[in-house]
Every structure is written in structure tokens, then in C-alpha cells.
Length: 467
Image (cartoon, rainbow, N blue to C red; front, side, top):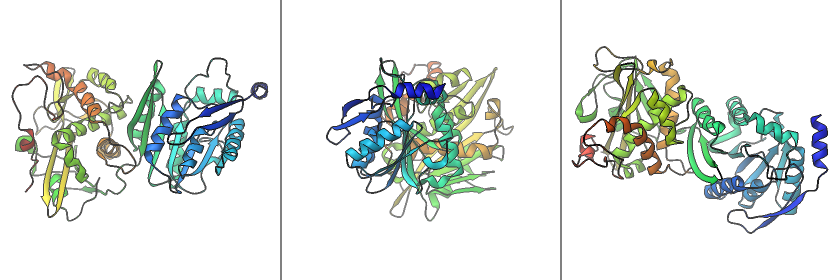
């Protein structure tokens, strides 16, 4: 019987360890038998939370608190902490350690997918969860409760469901930090959250033996932005560039664009068979330059394709581009996405970033045109229908989240590493680049192709002008 196993293990002797919270002196933790002790993954999460800054009395929820190390660390930084764990011995351990160290932490038994008492009575600004995946240390045993958590590994889905049904749990502007491994569950987690319309971003990584531990942030994309759907307009980029006021993440999309322009001033029109839309980006985006923005946008598109194809996201690991290659998806330098499939080759997507000064304000518009079907009026076109069957209305929330995942400036989330974005984009470009002459071997910091002698005046070509 499981309860008999739990009782048997609980009779073992506990232990006392010393652990150092990031930015604080060492603390002593007493850990009951079968309770997960702080390890490398705990340190990784603690460092990420420390970078988030002082809590200043804001609310924080830790799921799977174990020994209480993370909750205590956050309490010491000024967060108002609630914690929960499915293991009653972990609940007792966290309570005991918090009391010993003078930290006021509310601790409850349970967790997502379990009884509702784990939910905070007041909204929180931060949720942290070191998801279970590691085997116990040699000589250490887990009780059946931890065993079941390790085997199930669906807890993040239960949390996602709880947030969907009870959105008030997380305050506007709030962030969720999850730590996962590089196994199949770690591949699934970002895809699952992105499919539900959440932005996701790698924050920090740590190699532990054969495992790569990753801390990711999940958040509601562009919460200050407004989404507007128009039946028809001349150019969605022009609307963003000329609006009286814009917020980061404002999205204007249209069923029919009549006078849009693309790369090198080519005609860029659309119909209700396509997605045609533009985002207002943060003014700090100018520091990235148009080259990086368009690379990032192409990566957001292939992330979106990967999401609906139930594959790993290239923004979380460039190795996930290999599956897209097998499906014939290619990023074509500098700003197109093409599909080569069963002898049929066509352009799926075009991207254009533009900047303009409006009064004392610098505006940045990112336009994306994405075909659902091949368009008879446009030669060499192809649509996402050859990959999966999803209508435009279902595609928009995922694409919106994918753009935010790379390009949103969030006050509490580190921006992505530029080299990671360029590596993932080049990984999806490499087959098309290898077909050209001379061959290219990478992307430099300015967005140019390594191995090409000719200097491309990309900024001017892409309309990055300040009037």
C-alpha cells in the first residue's frame, strides 16, 4: 500500500544542511525524510528570482516548496510568500524552517490539479515552480507522493488550466518561472504554454551531468497592447506608424490590405485567406536594429508553426529547427519564409520592420504577412495549410505570443540573448544558404551573412528611416 510506503520512509532520520540563498548569508535547513532537498536546480531558480529583484511586499506563490529553501529566500528579499506541496512532510518541513528563520510564510498541502486550498486567496505577482524530474540522490528515497509527481509530470498543465479558469490568480504584469530539464517534458512545456497564448522565454541554463536545466519565464503577452481587426486598410504598418498614440504590442491586422509595401518597396497586398498584421514595438527596439527585428520576427513565425505542429520551439533550442527542415520550412535571407514540400516550392511569409519619427517619438512597426493557402494572384505562394489546418483566428493569439516571446520589453524579464536568436535563425537558414554561391557560414552581429563579400545596405532597403 502506498500509505504504508510513506509511513515506512517517514520513519527514517531527517538531516540538517546548510544552504546559501542568493544575496544572503547561509541558512540552516532541517529536512524530513522523503522531502526534496535544495540542489543545483534550486540554486538556478533562486538566482533567477534574485535577479527579479526585491519583493517589496508583493505576493509570491511557490509550488512544490519541498524544504522551503526558495520560499524562505524570497521571504528574505521582501516577498509576501505563500507555498504549497502535495507532500505533508514537505509542508511540515517548510513551516518548521520558516519559523526557525523568522519568516512569515503561509504553507498549504496540495497543488495544481488537487484541492483548491493551494490557490492564493489574493492575487500574486510571481509564481515559481521547480518542476519535478530528477531522480533522488544515491542512498535517498522518495515517498510515493514524490514518486507520483515524478511519473505524472503534467503539473504545469494543471497550473495552466487553473490560470485559464481563474485568471485573477496572477496579477497583470505577473510572471511565472518554471525550471525544467532537457528531456521530452522540457521540450513539451514551452510548446504547451505557447499554444495556450502565453509568451515564453529562456532566462537561464545550467548543465548538470547529462542534463541541461532551464529556467523559463511565462507571461501574458503585450498586456498593455490593443488588438484591432480591420476588414480592409491600405497598410497595417502605416496605421501603426501614424496612430496618435501607441502602446507596445498594439496589433493591427486586416482581412484585406490594398496598398502595402514589402522589401525593396515590392507590392505587399493580402486577402482574407492570409494573415496581414503589424505590431507596435517598444522604442528600445531601435537599439536592436531592423536586421535583428526581422530575424526575430521570422523566428516568431517558425515558433508559431512549430506550436501547431506540436514540436519543440526553436526559440528555446536551435536544435528544434531540424524537424522544420524535414517539413521543408526554410527561412530565406533576409526576410522571407518559404516551404519546399513534395516538389512544390512557395513563399509562406514576408516580414518588414519600419521606423519613423513622429514628433518627439520614435515609432517602430513590425509587419508580418502569412499565407493560409496559396494565393492565385501571387506567383510562388504557399500556405500553412500544407502543414496544419488552423484558421486565422486561432493562429493570431499564438503568433501574438510568439512575437512577444522575443520582442517584448518586460520590466521583470530579461531580454533574450541576441546570439541565441541569431543561432536559431541561421540553423533554419542553412539549407537555403548552402545552395547559393559563395556559401555563408553564419550571421554577424550586424545581421550580415558571414562569407559574403558584398556589403548589403539593409537598413535603407528595409525602410529604417528617421524623417
